[in-house]
Image (cartoon, rainbow over the protein chains, first blue to last red):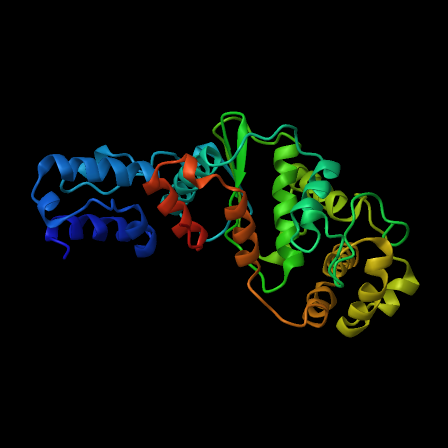
Length: 153
Length: 175
């Protein structure tokens, strides 16, 4: 059962637009009723949650502070983005950067850069109907690396 | 959204489609931003246009990323449609027939070819209408994309809580 303290933290995160499922996903597995009453556990909880969500941990430690995202909108180029306010922009940037950092930690380094040629080859290798060398291409997939022979020009 | 962390970049898709071709274009477009070195370390590019708008050149970088995507998906950056082709493919049904026939011959996925037609002619009504006829069973494209991502990630190389978080974001069960 969630005590008022951690419940309050979840409410504060929800108030800045964090999806409850995402907040639950960053909640530590070791969290317990016993941890709820431990100041050190509360601090560790806030550091862990803030790191995963791209939030300044100091803003979660203060009782009355609104959670602040680490990365501002100035670090991002927003293309034709309308109807989105500054808080949502910083949220998008910070959350995206936090997720990207974890993704890259779990991704083996690429051995080469990206070009249209290497990209199309990679797509063909990864596509499930063609992967594994079976040679059985999907009937709806005409994709093949290299230039087409006619239209479009 | 494309984010550069150090000398590496990651793409996050927040936009979905019931058909694979638009999502393939979004991905290829974001790959273009990476391949064309549009991002400085620590920088992100965020684009949340509706699908039609995303395929329209908005600035020099977007235009270049579009050309990169088209070249990646079709083999060439420039597209032209003749009057005869335009006439034959002007309706959703007509376009679906044309791309189903021409796609395999040209080595271009039919849905992508329909979007190429939309890009060239700005007849997006026909292009997106054709997708409904090309793909007989609509299905969320994000599921296939994220399933492939999970299969290529080394989730056991990161802390368990990070892996659990990533699984939640990807909407995919991870052991």
